[in-house]
Image (cartoon, rainbow, N blue to C red; front, side):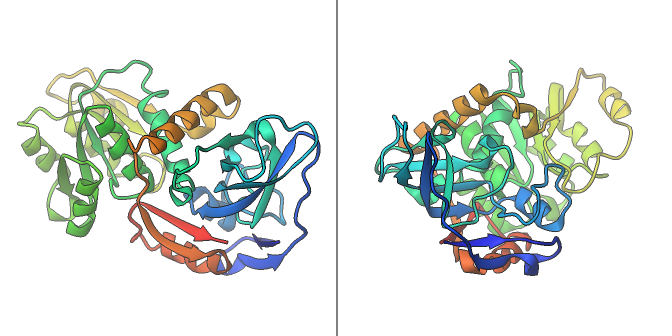
Length: 330
């Protein structure tokens, strides 16, 4: 089979397109033939060697794939040859292996997908897994009616916009251009804040009649995060789910207690909180597959790049221009 392998870390050039033996499924395992492969941020960290959960090198990166069952091992009962499936390396010991024409895994770690569901879209569900847990698992009963989604045209941002809108919430998306704003609106955002056209806080206040929003979801961190507390209504929560701009800087306690007096909350979320909770991971993923089948969500595909050009795919992904989901085709 053809696959992308890394033997060293660095820039996109370390992604080597190689020929490797096609795996054979053992008892209880299935072999999945790839239809489409998602490009995700953790893979760029693996490539750079900065991922906390690095696979051992040499490694095949990749955390998500859609495809069909090509072979089954002895004892496989539920999956059949030719069946559509979703592969999430979040179910594996090593979060890797999907940048390949074939992947083998235990049957119980592979998600069946109904016939007729677009497998290109299925290959983009990793972002929606994060978004689902942000809006369901992590809130722990927190009630909100309005949400500010930072980077609303990105992969997870798009998923957050769609899922929050499907739940009946008012969604305000923060973007960096008119084109990205138009895209976020097409995904369901009710209003747009363009951070290049003025102060985010002032724009949010204007859109909410001075009240602010109930919930803010941001991946950025860094020095700019502190100011976002001023976008919250009196019982609002800010949730950080990444460190794209580095760790949060500034006095969070002071930002929470800043006048006028409000009762604000701050939470940091990591998908790795669920590493030892397969039941909840499965609940979310099955729910998302149903939502795709019912067309409650639609994964917007930005581009389809051949697997052989994985280095180019990473350059495109890291350009900041991607809206929605970038996938590779084997």
